[in-house]
Amino acid sequence: MKKILVSACLYGDKCRYDEGDVSFDDPTFLKWKAEGRLVKICPEVCGGLKTPRPDSQIRGERVLARTGQDVTEEYEKGAKEAVRLAEENRVACCIMKQRSPSCGSKIIYDGTFTGGKIKGEGIAVRKLRKEGFKVFGEEDMEEVKSFIEE
Ligand code: SF4
Image (cartoon, rainbow, N blue to C red; front, side, top):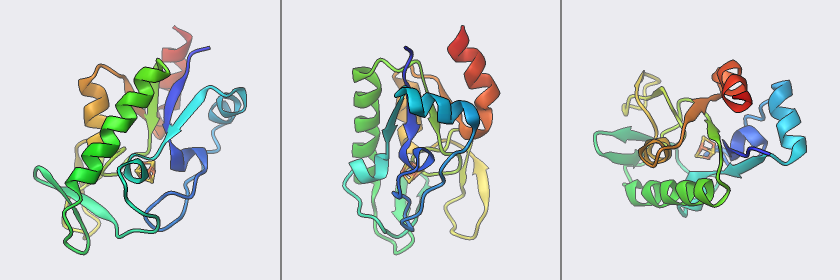
């Protein structure tokens, strides 16, 4: 059975900065969840950040919390753990939460905390791709299904 790395908040964990989740109710995603195919990770929590926590955004080469705290190191640590888990489970691909500074795969917030978004990828996704893993966003389920069936 091909395993898939997924953002823990999509899986249903309340690990978002505001202690919420974004439980994903796509039928195929739920079927894979029930089969035990999904390997969940929250890179921010794995990097040592608490929940709840101030939201953060990527600004240049750094990740800054809304409070101004530099959390780049925590994000890098969480990204390493995502790669470790992906390798350990030999995942076929990843489904990660779009727009997150860790998990975004196409779009992220622009670093101004004003709601603006730009093309880009989160720190964990960047590292996963660097190590050769295919990463999709939750809006790409049709593509994921074809990829998994190949
Ligand atoms: S780091 Fe990823 S898994 Fe964790 S809350 Fe943010 S989007 Fe979800």
